[in-house]
Length: 267
Image (cartoon, rainbow, N blue to C red):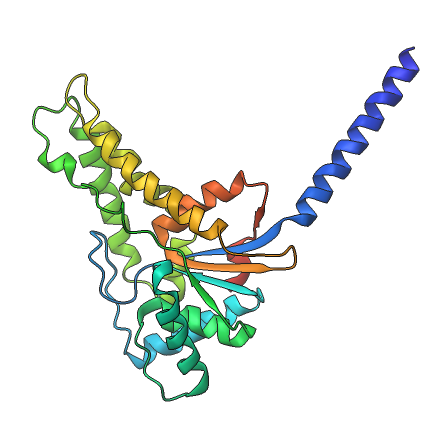
């Protein structure tokens, strides 16, 4: 009986390993890339960047070539899905004419278009969501009689000092920093979780604002999930770093996607 029990446990272990390996093999590989916005943004946290500067263009093109080694078949950007026709008309014109000045600029034109072109991708998808985007990330500075106003204030001051140093780096090193797990977790904290410390006694003012940002990112993930894919597809996503951070968290638990290591493509 003991021998049978041991053999059964071995069989179950082998079967479990096979199933896990099979499921992993069936998942769609995703390169989920974090960036700062390379064109004007109303976001509170900005990196100064001139998208028309020749040196910046050269650096972003070199980065696009690195990322294209992933060989995506699908490219997703921080544009609303309802603008997909406009987005793809712009991308098509970019493909046909080297001298064409794109209507959609920033990281979409500088990196996404170039990655897609090098990889032979014919269509780009917007997956952003804006209907629920508005939330008061400044509530910590506005709310009176808070139970704890120091935790968030001290955290902001600490992280802002770190980000000031990041601003001095090259474009490649900025993006390496943005795509590190430590920095991505800070972006989630900075833009959402830290707000949970801002409340008056018995209330949830900051948490309620943070939940709005969670909802937006869940909807972005839902937009991604509505794109038709096959098991052979490879998805490249480029978005503002906080959205990347949230999508990473969602995809870590996903039965559909397998994240690849971004650092493997930023050499």
